[in-house]
Image 1 (tube, rainbow, N blue to C red):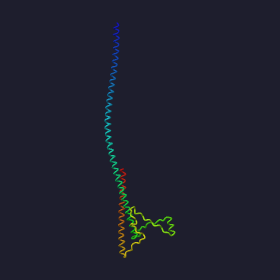
Image 2: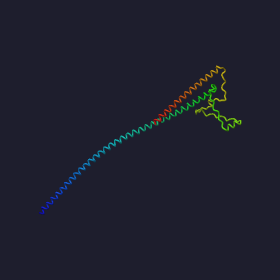
Image 3: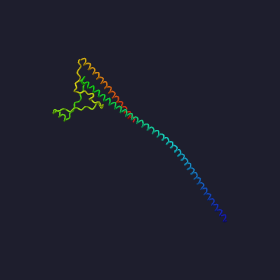
Image 4: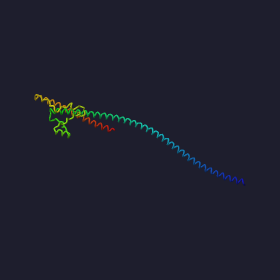
Length: 227
């Protein structure tokens, strides 16, 4: 009887253990499925990351090439700007030299023409402005003294050509008139031709200066637009 009881208890214990084993088996199967799902998810994530890494590397390579091309373009642009600036400075210096030399030549011609008009066309002659005396000099002159001498100009329009080189002293009398009316007409006609030639020279110089000024303005505008 005790043996039968022990067998019954053993059967009950085996059934319980079997139930527990089946429960554990089901639990393990669920865990295995979940683990397998997580593994597949991790594998997909790794594949996605590898794809992203490859795309990033490709993007970095492309960006590196673009940066190199951009740096080359900047270098070439800097070189172009430097060359354009150097050319603009040279053109501007040439323009200034031209304006200075032409301005000096124009003033010199006008000065000579005015001196010729003094003798051949007095109506067209423009006298130099009278000397302005200081208060002390006016007192000296009013008391019978002599006005101080006028200082000679340093030159004509910065040319370094002394006015005394071309100036005819205002106190020196003009050359005696020709002996005959015909000779006087010939001298007047000759002086008129010289004066006309001077006028042509002045007009040519003025045109050249006007053209140079317009070209300089256009060149400066183009340079500023490029900058």
